[in-house]
Length: 305
Image (cartoon, rainbow, N blue to C red; front, side):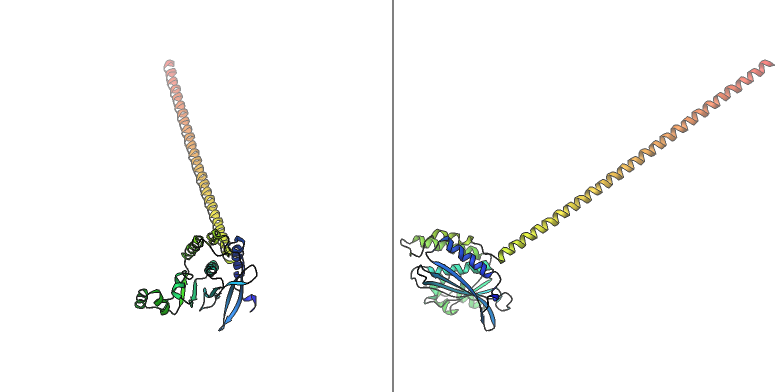
Protein backbone atom coordinates (compact mmCIF):
# COMPACT_ATOMS: atom_id res chain seq x y z
CA UNK A 1 0.00 0.00 0.00
CA UNK A 2 1.02 3.63 -0.42
CA UNK A 3 3.30 5.29 2.11
CA UNK A 4 0.68 7.99 2.74
CA UNK A 5 -1.12 5.46 4.95
CA UNK A 6 1.81 5.35 7.40
CA UNK A 7 1.17 6.55 10.93
CA UNK A 8 2.34 10.15 11.53
CA UNK A 9 5.96 10.36 12.66
CA UNK A 10 6.48 6.57 12.71
CA UNK A 11 9.18 6.45 10.02
CA UNK A 12 11.12 9.39 11.53
CA UNK A 13 11.04 7.80 14.96
CA UNK A 14 12.24 4.42 13.70
CA UNK A 15 14.99 5.95 11.54
CA UNK A 16 16.25 7.96 14.54
CA UNK A 17 16.43 4.98 16.92
CA UNK A 18 17.93 2.52 14.39
CA UNK A 19 20.38 5.23 13.24
CA UNK A 20 21.62 5.72 16.81
CA UNK A 21 22.06 1.95 17.31
CA UNK A 22 24.18 1.68 14.15
CA UNK A 23 26.20 4.78 15.11
CA UNK A 24 26.95 3.39 18.59
CA UNK A 25 28.58 0.34 17.02
CA UNK A 26 27.01 -2.16 19.42
CA UNK A 27 26.94 -4.81 16.70
CA UNK A 28 29.31 -5.76 13.93
CA UNK A 29 26.15 -5.82 11.84
CA UNK A 30 24.03 -3.25 10.03
CA UNK A 31 20.40 -2.78 11.10
CA UNK A 32 17.55 -1.54 8.94
CA UNK A 33 13.88 -0.97 9.74
CA UNK A 34 11.29 -0.53 7.01
CA UNK A 35 7.70 0.52 7.78
CA UNK A 36 4.90 -0.33 5.38
CA UNK A 37 1.12 -0.10 5.31
CA UNK A 38 -0.88 -3.32 5.45
CA UNK A 39 -4.58 -4.12 5.02
CA UNK A 40 -6.00 -7.18 6.79
CA UNK A 41 -9.73 -7.93 7.01
CA UNK A 42 -10.52 -4.31 6.20
CA UNK A 43 -8.25 -2.99 8.97
CA UNK A 44 -5.20 -0.89 8.06
CA UNK A 45 -2.05 -1.46 10.10
CA UNK A 46 1.56 -0.34 9.84
CA UNK A 47 4.10 -3.15 9.75
CA UNK A 48 7.75 -2.59 10.62
CA UNK A 49 10.32 -5.11 9.43
CA UNK A 50 13.70 -5.01 11.22
CA UNK A 51 16.59 -6.76 9.47
CA UNK A 52 20.21 -7.31 10.58
CA UNK A 53 22.83 -7.76 7.82
CA UNK A 54 26.35 -9.08 8.16
CA UNK A 55 29.37 -7.67 6.28
CA UNK A 56 28.43 -9.82 3.26
CA UNK A 57 24.90 -8.32 3.22
CA UNK A 58 23.38 -11.60 4.35
CA UNK A 59 20.24 -11.45 6.51
CA UNK A 60 21.19 -12.91 9.90
CA UNK A 61 18.30 -11.65 11.99
CA UNK A 62 14.75 -10.35 11.50
CA UNK A 63 11.85 -9.05 13.54
CA UNK A 64 8.37 -7.99 12.47
CA UNK A 65 5.66 -6.10 14.34
CA UNK A 66 2.55 -4.12 13.42
CA UNK A 67 0.80 -1.10 14.94
CA UNK A 68 -2.87 -0.38 14.50
CA UNK A 69 -4.02 3.24 14.06
CA UNK A 70 -5.49 5.05 17.04
CA UNK A 71 -8.68 5.91 15.19
CA UNK A 72 -9.61 2.23 14.94
CA UNK A 73 -12.15 1.34 17.63
CA UNK A 74 -10.94 -2.26 18.03
CA UNK A 75 -7.17 -1.95 17.81
CA UNK A 76 -6.67 1.52 19.31
CA UNK A 77 -3.08 1.98 20.60
CA UNK A 78 -2.44 -1.70 19.99
CA UNK A 79 0.69 -3.44 18.62
CA UNK A 80 1.31 -7.07 17.69
CA UNK A 81 4.77 -8.65 17.53
CA UNK A 82 4.58 -11.24 14.74
CA UNK A 83 7.99 -12.87 14.97
CA UNK A 84 11.67 -12.66 15.90
CA UNK A 85 14.22 -14.87 14.18
CA UNK A 86 17.99 -15.30 13.76
CA UNK A 87 20.23 -17.68 11.87
CA UNK A 88 23.13 -17.20 14.30
CA UNK A 89 22.92 -19.75 17.08
CA UNK A 90 23.97 -18.78 20.61
CA UNK A 91 24.37 -15.14 19.49
CA UNK A 92 21.40 -13.67 21.46
CA UNK A 93 20.70 -11.48 18.45
CA UNK A 94 17.01 -12.43 18.61
CA UNK A 95 16.77 -11.18 22.20
CA UNK A 96 18.38 -7.89 21.19
CA UNK A 97 16.02 -7.37 18.23
CA UNK A 98 13.03 -8.08 20.51
CA UNK A 99 14.16 -5.47 23.07
CA UNK A 100 14.76 -3.03 20.23
CA UNK A 101 11.17 -3.51 19.04
CA UNK A 102 9.88 -2.83 22.57
CA UNK A 103 11.98 0.36 22.63
CA UNK A 104 10.40 1.58 19.38
CA UNK A 105 6.84 0.76 20.54
CA UNK A 106 7.37 2.47 23.90
CA UNK A 107 8.76 5.59 22.24
CA UNK A 108 5.76 5.76 19.89
CA UNK A 109 3.27 5.68 22.76
CA UNK A 110 1.67 2.28 22.16
CA UNK A 111 -0.48 1.21 25.14
CA UNK A 112 -0.72 -2.54 24.61
CA UNK A 113 1.44 -5.23 22.94
CA UNK A 114 0.43 -8.79 22.06
CA UNK A 115 2.63 -11.72 21.04
CA UNK A 116 1.99 -15.36 20.05
CA UNK A 117 4.62 -17.51 21.74
CA UNK A 118 4.84 -20.43 19.31
CA UNK A 119 8.47 -21.31 20.00
CA UNK A 120 9.69 -24.90 20.52
CA UNK A 121 9.70 -24.26 24.27
CA UNK A 122 7.16 -21.50 25.12
CA UNK A 123 7.78 -21.75 28.88
CA UNK A 124 11.53 -21.20 28.49
CA UNK A 125 10.97 -18.37 25.97
CA UNK A 126 8.55 -16.67 28.40
CA UNK A 127 11.30 -16.61 31.04
CA UNK A 128 14.02 -15.67 28.53
CA UNK A 129 13.63 -13.69 25.32
CA UNK A 130 9.99 -12.74 26.04
CA UNK A 131 10.25 -11.96 29.76
CA UNK A 132 9.02 -8.40 29.13
CA UNK A 133 5.63 -9.97 28.30
CA UNK A 134 3.06 -11.77 30.46
CA UNK A 135 0.69 -14.64 29.76
CA UNK A 136 -2.60 -13.23 28.47
CA UNK A 137 -5.25 -13.86 31.14
CA UNK A 138 -7.34 -10.82 30.24
CA UNK A 139 -10.66 -12.70 30.08
CA UNK A 140 -10.02 -14.98 33.06
CA UNK A 141 -12.43 -15.07 35.99
CA UNK A 142 -11.03 -14.61 39.51
CA UNK A 143 -11.35 -18.35 40.15
CA UNK A 144 -9.60 -19.28 36.90
CA UNK A 145 -6.86 -16.72 37.55
CA UNK A 146 -6.18 -18.20 40.99
CA UNK A 147 -5.98 -21.68 39.49
CA UNK A 148 -3.69 -20.37 36.74
CA UNK A 149 -1.31 -18.85 39.29
CA UNK A 150 -0.79 -22.32 40.83
CA UNK A 151 0.22 -23.93 37.50
CA UNK A 152 3.75 -24.64 36.28
CA UNK A 153 5.23 -22.55 33.47
CA UNK A 154 4.60 -25.35 30.97
CA UNK A 155 0.96 -25.67 32.08
CA UNK A 156 0.46 -21.91 31.85
CA UNK A 157 1.73 -21.87 28.24
CA UNK A 158 -0.75 -24.62 27.31
CA UNK A 159 -3.63 -22.97 29.20
CA UNK A 160 -3.37 -19.68 27.26
CA UNK A 161 -2.27 -21.40 24.01
CA UNK A 162 0.95 -19.38 23.91
CA UNK A 163 -0.78 -15.98 23.88
CA UNK A 164 1.15 -13.24 25.68
CA UNK A 165 0.29 -9.62 26.31
CA UNK A 166 1.52 -6.55 28.21
CA UNK A 167 -0.24 -3.32 29.11
CA UNK A 168 2.35 -0.56 28.99
CA UNK A 169 2.47 1.86 31.92
CA UNK A 170 4.78 4.37 33.60
CA UNK A 171 6.89 1.47 34.91
CA UNK A 172 7.40 -0.12 31.48
CA UNK A 173 10.42 2.00 30.56
CA UNK A 174 12.09 1.12 33.86
CA UNK A 175 11.41 -2.57 33.17
CA UNK A 176 12.93 -2.29 29.69
CA UNK A 177 16.02 -0.49 31.05
CA UNK A 178 16.47 -3.24 33.66
CA UNK A 179 16.26 -5.94 30.98
CA UNK A 180 18.78 -4.09 28.77
CA UNK A 181 21.25 -3.82 31.67
CA UNK A 182 20.75 -7.48 32.56
CA UNK A 183 21.28 -8.40 28.89
CA UNK A 184 24.53 -6.39 28.80
CA UNK A 185 25.82 -8.08 31.97
CA UNK A 186 24.92 -11.48 30.52
CA UNK A 187 27.01 -10.83 27.39
CA UNK A 188 29.93 -9.48 29.43
CA UNK A 189 29.91 -12.56 31.67
CA UNK A 190 30.74 -14.93 28.80
CA UNK A 191 34.46 -15.67 28.37
CA UNK A 192 34.00 -15.87 24.61
CA UNK A 193 31.09 -13.81 23.29
CA UNK A 194 29.77 -14.20 19.74
CA UNK A 195 31.79 -12.12 17.23
CA UNK A 196 28.73 -10.10 16.15
CA UNK A 197 29.02 -8.07 19.37
CA UNK A 198 31.29 -5.05 19.44
CA UNK A 199 30.50 -2.17 21.83
CA UNK A 200 28.60 -4.08 24.52
CA UNK A 201 28.77 -1.36 27.27
CA UNK A 202 26.73 0.98 25.04
CA UNK A 203 23.70 -1.27 25.48
CA UNK A 204 23.15 0.51 28.81
CA UNK A 205 22.63 3.80 26.95
CA UNK A 206 19.89 2.64 24.57
CA UNK A 207 17.23 3.91 26.98
CA UNK A 208 18.63 7.43 26.49
CA UNK A 209 17.82 7.43 22.77
CA UNK A 210 14.82 9.66 22.24
CA UNK A 211 12.50 9.28 19.31
CA UNK A 212 11.44 12.15 17.11
CA UNK A 213 8.20 13.52 15.78
CA UNK A 214 5.16 13.08 17.98
CA UNK A 215 6.91 13.04 21.33
CA UNK A 216 9.04 16.05 20.47
CA UNK A 217 5.97 17.96 19.24
CA UNK A 218 4.24 17.08 22.48
CA UNK A 219 7.19 18.57 24.38
CA UNK A 220 7.03 21.69 22.24
CA UNK A 221 3.30 21.95 22.90
CA UNK A 222 3.87 21.47 26.62
CA UNK A 223 6.64 24.11 26.67
CA UNK A 224 4.44 26.46 24.64
CA UNK A 225 1.62 25.99 27.14
CA UNK A 226 4.01 26.64 30.03
CA UNK A 227 5.27 29.79 28.30
CA UNK A 228 1.72 30.94 27.59
CA UNK A 229 0.60 30.27 31.16
CA UNK A 230 3.71 32.04 32.45
CA UNK A 231 2.89 35.08 30.28
CA UNK A 232 -0.71 35.06 31.49
CA UNK A 233 0.45 34.86 35.07
CA UNK A 234 2.99 37.62 34.52
CA UNK A 235 0.41 39.84 32.83
CA UNK A 236 -2.07 39.07 35.60
CA UNK A 237 0.54 40.04 38.21
CA UNK A 238 1.33 43.24 36.31
CA UNK A 239 -2.37 44.11 36.14
CA UNK A 240 -2.85 43.30 39.81
CA UNK A 241 0.20 45.35 40.79
CA UNK A 242 -0.99 48.19 38.55
CA UNK A 243 -4.41 48.09 40.23
CA UNK A 244 -2.77 48.04 43.65
CA UNK A 245 -0.60 51.02 42.71
CA UNK A 246 -3.57 52.89 41.26
CA UNK A 247 -5.69 52.17 44.32
CA UNK A 248 -2.77 53.18 46.54
CA UNK A 249 -2.41 56.46 44.61
CA UNK A 250 -6.16 57.07 44.84
CA UNK A 251 -6.08 56.45 48.57
CA UNK A 252 -3.01 58.68 48.97
CA UNK A 253 -4.60 61.45 46.89
CA UNK A 254 -7.83 61.07 48.83
CA UNK A 255 -5.92 61.38 52.11
CA UNK A 256 -4.06 64.42 50.80
CA UNK A 257 -7.36 66.04 49.77
CA UNK A 258 -8.97 65.22 53.09
CA UNK A 259 -5.97 66.55 54.98
CA UNK A 260 -5.98 69.67 52.79
CA UNK A 261 -9.68 70.20 53.49
CA UNK A 262 -9.09 69.69 57.20
CA UNK A 263 -6.25 72.19 57.11
CA UNK A 264 -8.31 74.71 55.11
CA UNK A 265 -11.28 74.33 57.46
CA UNK A 266 -8.97 74.67 60.42
CA UNK A 267 -7.49 77.86 58.94
CA UNK A 268 -10.96 79.24 58.23
CA UNK A 269 -12.04 78.52 61.78
CA UNK A 270 -8.85 80.04 63.18
CA UNK A 271 -9.25 83.15 60.99
CA UNK A 272 -12.89 83.41 61.95
CA UNK A 273 -11.96 83.20 65.63
CA UNK A 274 -9.26 85.80 65.15
CA UNK A 275 -11.72 88.10 63.41
CA UNK A 276 -14.35 87.60 66.09
CA UNK A 277 -11.84 88.20 68.84
CA UNK A 278 -10.59 91.28 67.01
CA UNK A 279 -14.16 92.62 66.71
CA UNK A 280 -14.82 91.90 70.37
CA UNK A 281 -11.64 93.71 71.31
CA UNK A 282 -12.48 96.67 69.06
CA UNK A 283 -16.05 96.88 70.37
CA UNK A 284 -14.77 96.66 73.92
CA UNK A 285 -12.32 99.51 73.28
CA UNK A 286 -15.05 101.63 71.71
CA UNK A 287 -17.36 101.04 74.65
CA UNK A 288 -14.62 101.90 77.13
CA UNK A 289 -13.74 105.08 75.30
CA UNK A 290 -17.39 106.03 75.18
CA UNK A 291 -17.76 105.52 78.91
CA UNK A 292 -14.70 107.68 79.56
CA UNK A 293 -16.14 110.48 77.43
CA UNK A 294 -19.46 110.34 79.18
CA UNK A 295 -17.79 110.50 82.57
CA UNK A 296 -15.78 113.49 81.40
CA UNK A 297 -18.87 115.36 80.22
CA UNK A 298 -20.58 114.89 83.60
CA UNK A 299 -17.59 116.32 85.40
CA UNK A 300 -17.44 119.42 83.20
CA UNK A 301 -21.13 120.19 83.81
CA UNK A 302 -20.70 120.03 87.62
CA UNK A 303 -17.84 122.48 87.53
CA UNK A 304 -19.88 124.94 85.58
CA UNK A 305 -22.61 124.96 88.25
